[in-house]
Length: 215
Image (cartoon, rainbow, N blue to C red; front, side, top):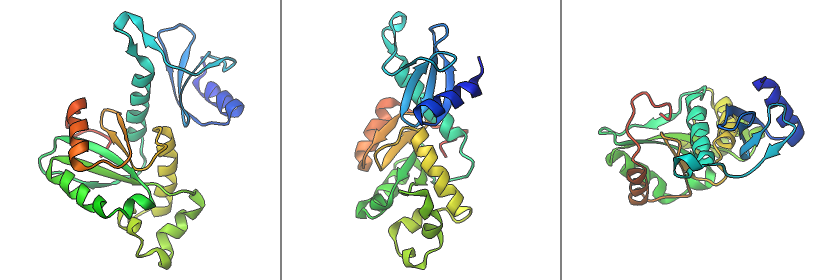
């Protein structure tokens, strides 16, 4: 089957970008990673299914959730720019943090990030703005110099990076900010205190991986 042709067909018919095409255990059925989540399609894009696929031969393993994790890992691995990383000295976990302007204004966010660093969690920062058209303003408008989000913006290729982060957040299924993505591809939505996030990360047992693209 022609992967690129399938991507173009689904994008044209549904109006959503397709980032990933993977075969499924069902012959002729493919998993599509899109900006609206996981879909399933035949090789030509004539029939599309939305829903959850379970592998009944493997204790009802949720293949749809596994597909989303794979999509997030692939998305972070293909990031063209190097994000700002708050590196933990004794690293236990790595997470990517997608944050917007309102998240940057949280008084406790800076303290949360420092606490996470001290607790062994390295955090890669991905600032996300509402509209790509405002990327240049965020990077250069003097009226925004004192905005808390400025502290999290990249120092080089600022506009390009902000635009890329919008597409990346869509690819990873980030619809609510802030959002945390573990190096294993798990998504944690909403603001989390350091204690809450550590419990979640310890529960999913994400190993620290020096080669992880999340950082």
